[in-house]
Image 1 (cartoon, rainbow, N blue to C red):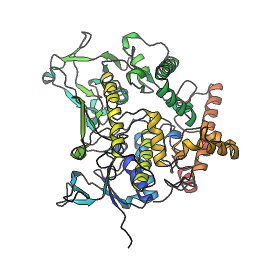
Image 2 (image 1 turned 135 degrees about the horizontal axis):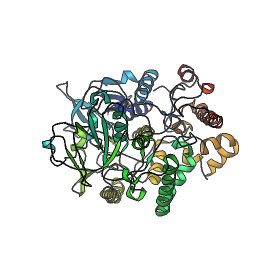
Image 3 (image 1 turned 120 degrees about the vertical axis):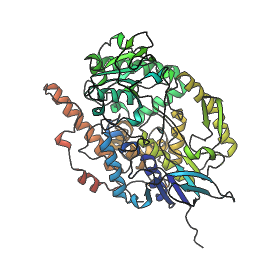
Image 4 (image 1 turned 90 degrees about the horizontal axis):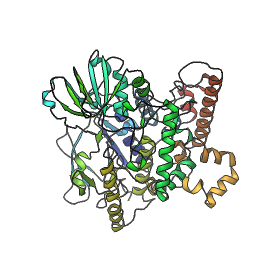
Length: 557
């Protein structure tokens, strides 16, 4: 008798959900993704629904396009070096279309309830437009990590006659034309909105309670921030962070401070960007190309934290200054993780009443149901977000397919008991960092082993790595020291996740394209030729997306 494949509901069809769907179909599961929006892409797809988190149109990916593609789908050559939100959404829609994944996705479907059946053998999933539940063997929770807006209450806000809105409801600067606006926060979203507002608002302020190290996407030589990130350098950094944390924090903070100084020169202390939290405070830099120039040019004014609203349009700042005639306050204060309807299916630990934590082994599997629930948007390490979700999805598919194993339940609980106090301590020091943050050194080894990428075994000091180096030295060097591209994830055939035949060609091309781009920038700089750095690829290395996607066909599910 032929057994039917296990049924899997993938809740969400953003980058994480699409990656999960692809990996599960590769392993023969009967998988279906459910997306509440009318199309894929998650936050990268614009939505008119104010309850949906969407990137504003001016948002750019923080890392270069060389380091963030889908593992088996190159970014089109004509895309700019740092891909904009609309283009990134189009990229994901193109991937789903080209790989035939659309037939496995149901759109405009909102999951509203989930629970175990009476026999405790399957999961019942209800949708808002259906009377009866659907039954599934397994559920992948892939609804994203930015889901519930943080809404800090401002003292006296009931007095305010203007608008107070969270960034989730921000569309564009046009609706604030000729108004005086305060943006609250100094993270990536707040910085993006402040810069966007400056083009239309009469006066734009950015208000913050602490400083931040602000970095541009490109350095003075026109190199992207991820230029120095290779497989080898990132593994060394993670090792140092694990075993020599004080040295790692000191060196990293020094390097970032040096980059900030080189990018912008001395900063006016009145801006309040220094002192800023560092690695020891679990903080990360804000990435923005225009905020510092706009503050320096007085198009955006940096002010201290809002203490209270003391009049219909008057704000009192933490340092005692008053700002009058304010029309709107935009809260760029970020989001909280939310497991939504899955909350009741998980167990929780409360070390800090302000921070209940889900009990998840490696921040993915609940020990009670590791064979049937996986949360792939919760883990957070310092690598490209979309690529991290894809890697996690590969690992989940391999575990459920029986090709990779999880430890026994006691071992999973022991990991959770050791991890949660560390995370709680970090959140108490710096409450803005992600709840799902992990120590990357051990976690990445675990997820790569489960996924079966073969990278740790073939790039490093093992016998397999020596064999790879001996037989293909030039390509080994490209993989180890070249662009840290997700195409590496599907390079080696290990018998686990599906390898991609086009991976080698894509890896070589990404490195050639980056070298040509940097060579072109160096030449233009020497010739003192004007033009915006990094906006577009040089014509000499530009080909059509049709050419690249026909020659490097992604693997079909």
